Length: 278
Image (cartoon, rainbow, N blue to C red):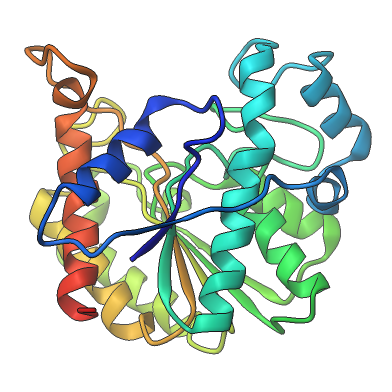
């Protein structure tokens, strides 16, 4: 799996730790690819220009509840990773990864929930602008409703984007039992089958042990990922990490503390490698 890593930006530690974990795992094929940060013009395809300038300059809240210039500096790299991964996936007809988080709560002129710019929608719109796609599918299986993505799609009238967000329908373990979740997922996958590009926002914050989760077991998350890859993995697909907040209180290093989350992302990458060996 090609990974468009954000290692050249002052980003948060999770993407770096995930990529390092994949590189050290013999059961995962992982190739690192470089990329360029998104331009102002690309960011404002999805977002209001004054909002983009305000966040990057520190005039506006960045969705993290602050105006930290280090976060602002990282944001074009987050979007740039998604853009580069999307174009690579289309041109090579592969499943690749943008090891990034923090997109789907950001709307045209606002950030929220640790999301500043919506890299998912920015990448989709850049691909459309370049004439590389007619239709894009966004399957968002993060624990939370992708309200920002919905708002951008409505605001810009992006009827060529098929968007399915599990957070809009599943809020508890009870919602998911008796096959209800997999029926929804299989319908969402079928709805996305006609797309030229699939964006798979593969959050792991729905895990039953996650502080913000309570929905899925480890095995059920594996079933989720396998269903997406088996039915859509023949299409150009970009995986994004999205949410995941479990911590090991006994861990002494950043990787050890984040191991519960790393293990779930590792599972996703291993399933992909098993289905699509190099």
